[in-house]
Length: 463
Image (cartoon, rainbow, N blue to C red; front, side, top):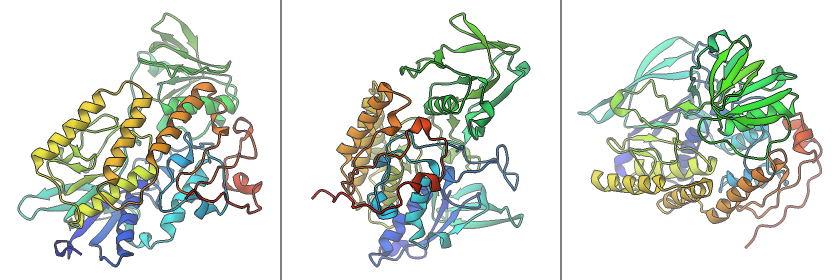
């Protein structure tokens, strides 16, 4: 143990996949007999999981705080599980048998919890606790956190040497305004408040946006009985071969009652509108000089290695990138952040850090398409893994899977979730789900696993 870490305190804001990855990283070190600093994780929800902790609530939660989650019923993974698999905790280890490549949310949440349940991570988390304000004392070089215990309605302060912001960036909506929308007679919501397709059955639905949420919500509503789905894009359409009943049109200009008008001169009436217009990086607990200011992209400026706030590296941001990779990327970030806090990874000078950031930003600016984006994030994670002892996995094969996935979606947006992939961690080939995705209207874990009760021989991992 580096003696500089003795008596140090680490604050983590958020117990979603990124915050849990940080706890897991310290636990991995303790298994080597290396003592960690004191760690406290603050989570405003009543349970861990972040976005994966589904809530029926919209607007505000039990204690009046803005609802964090944007998850909804019938949500299935929109990318192969083999692309997000933890390299130190496989799906085989968790489920004891092969499962399909595209599990529903409850199954993925079960997997996330499986790894963390094996640890004593819950002991480090203060649930129902939100960070109200953070300040940094230049003299003591410590962070002061003002915190609210929501359950007890109690405000208190604590001091920390390091601050890890793992609060996510898919929970504060971008909500645009369109002329006439205040007089639209149907329901208007942001994707953040979408909780399932049931309410749109037999309705004509307009989605604003061309993001993954527009794509997924549109297909789900089509699957669950919407009369029609229209997606309105600002600059570029999603551009897949949509089935009859789903279409894309250029950007909405204004509403006239229930009628929406578009830039190509067409118009149509709708029953409901869902704004799939993205999210803001929002950190209301941070002062201006410590706040990450960025749009959603693969390499936010001002973060060395996409993690360390360059002006003050004791401030660490996890999971702030746009994401192809998810859980395993959060792990690689958390492992490196841990090594820095433990004195095992030395940061170069501020000038050299800035040069490294500039190098990545220049490459980011040269990205032409989704395939380039996959290669960019694959190389980013390779860069992180080379700097820590996070268990390596075959990133080139994962990158290939992402590219296959992109092609699968282009080939058929309704059936790509029926495809299967092979784990780079264990070599196990995924099993086809017992029901075609378009026919599967139940996303429960019980239903998902019900037809696969017999334990089957796993395909042995490749040597």
